[in-house]
Amino acid sequence: MLPDHSCRCGCESAFIAAVLLDSALESSIVRSHHMACACMSSVANGVDHFKHGRLTEAMQMFNKALQIDDDNVEALVARGALYVCSPCCCSVV
Image 1: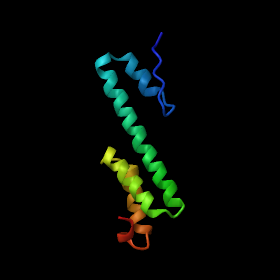
Image 2 (image 1 turned 120 degrees about the horizontal axis):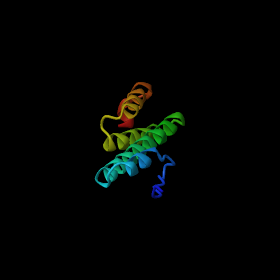
Image 3 (image 1 turned 120 degrees about the vertical axis):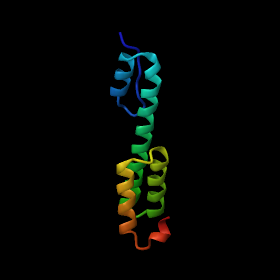
Image 4 (image 1 turned 45 degrees about the horizontal axis):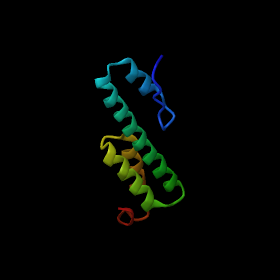
C-alpha cells in the first residue's frame, strides 16, 4: 500500500511518482511539484487581477511567479500582455 501523499493543490501525480521512486528523489519531486503549483497559482491570480483591471496587482502576481520560476512561460507571456495592454507601462511596474 502506498503512503498517503495528498497534495494541497489536489494533484497526486507527482506524489505517486515520488513514492514509486527511492526516497532520495521523493523530496526533490515533491518540492518541485509544490513550486510549480505556487507559480501557477500566482499566474492565475495575476490573470484574474488583469481581467478586472487591477494592473498593479496583476504585475505583482506575475513577478511573484517569476521569482519562483524565472523561466515560466505563462508568467512571461502574461506579463508581456500586461505591458502591451496597460495605458502606461510605467504605472504598473
